[in-house]
Length: 300
Image (cartoon, rainbow, N blue to C red; front, side, top):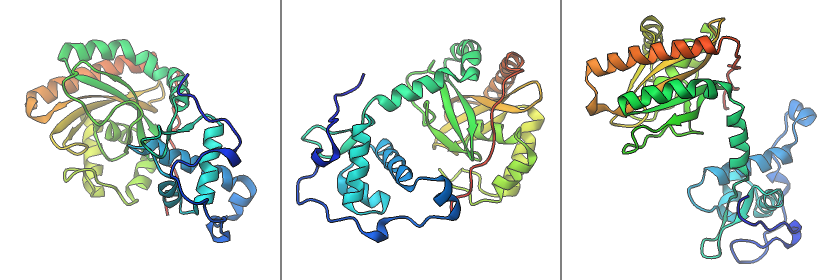
């Protein structure tokens, strides 16, 4: 499955951008290792995974020079990273007219297998599809993943409008209705810890003040759903309700979205109540499920 790859040894793998061979690797290219890293973490494996992330997130093929720059290393070290990813089938060289490296479909195969093991997605699908069709609007499902949420399903009842929150996209815990619905129903200690961190912004409407976010989280707990107006994308609104297990532990959230101008206050209230009801039904079927919710270490 996926494009053919060059599976030859790295010494013979062609470079995507012609020119002299990269200079020998420098000692100062090696990242400093903490005691924990030297015991448990392979810095070479970490560099390869960082290279995969750089190539995966790029909107066009990544040249060797760009890969080296993103990794903060020499071209010879970046070249070894690329050759390793090619040999393992994750990356290929782009067609000759577009110099650089790009993903193969292997990562999609892996992600699909992971999605199929996400029980919440399976349980929620039928009910959310019916609600999406009722309103002719798109509904997404998100689950917590460290200090973000990740979207694991999407029902496209409104194909005329495309949103940021496609499957695989991530949002910080304070950005968007699904994120705040999850944060509001997570452990109180976790939300306090998260709000003590530096918060990123997506638009001018993204909430950044911890006290204001705490007040919103309390409102979400009181009314049973979260509302987002333009804080992920300008002109887009969303409503999200939590999905919990029998111990009231947060499993995820479902969110319905549309262009802000199409919703009145009554529209928001109607969708919020319907989504809350449907998510309660889904929660009853997910009573025995568990979903880890632990913050990732704060980036230095």
